[in-house]
Length: 426
Ligand SMILES: [Zn+2]
Image (cartoon, rainbow, N blue to C red; front, top):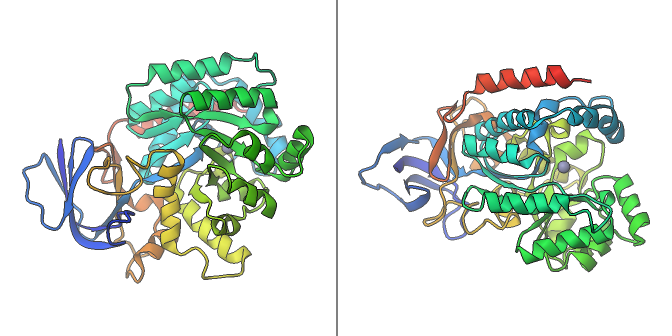
């Protein structure tokens, strides 16, 4: 299948190209971007006229729990612990594989409709989540969530190993070693997971220092002054994606930068759960690569990374009392190429370049909020909403065109999810 996108305005996020180019054509053949230039004349299966629109790489969500779509807005009025104990865990106990499949389908639709083409997920009954991703055509990096208090508790790792074998031929599905957190496992179990990651050359994905209690628990349980000491001591030979990192102090950040660690910043979930605001400016000053995540909708409300980009910029300018911090292009990097680097997928995705895989979105900027354009990058961060994404292409295939989802029926899935929540509601 050959697709030709005509006359578009391109934000490629490629270091080899101009940051913003006008009147560009993009030729896609099968899964790859084969040519980017002005005036491409080629016989193709489909032409998309993207005049007055913007094409950019699909967004990459580096921390989510997509089966939690059905728990949206259950957290109001609770602390994190109360919410987990009184609402989430009792409801999760009632979930079956089919529920997780439909809840994940709902999230896949939400992501495709708001311009996300790749996500990094962590949950259980992972088979159902993978099935939902395959059904909708979205790119997924996933795991079987790992937690345990004994190195003999191998069942979850064996499940992960089986998943890796089962889906090894599917190029949209990749895996990492998702350790839930240092506070839900002991050191010997964590070491066993890290060994598995090294043996299989997989990234490690873990919640880290999301709130003050977690920080204090790690300090107490592991007998360290700074939680980051554990990362330096045990995680120094792995590629690490650490979600949240809200409660890192200056010393932690200095230690973390000495490791191969990528931070997934989830500001909306952190705000909503009253955790605080991660020191992103300080991390950037130390050269740490920051990507963006939403967390599950239970705490993050939605999976719209355009909202996350806006919060990221505004929070850092505000708490540092410095309007010059984090220009809009830097924020776009966090949601695209930095996410690809975090997931070890930057040879394939994260920027629009000849030879890379065609994961891209077409944004309609002809809206009352988005015209006239003085600064296209700032326009995208502050005024474009996920719902301005008109067309989403993943692996060279159109998965949403003119706001219509191609592979699944949205209404049927919403109805299914409403029935699930009626059944399990607390
Ligand atoms: Zn999380």
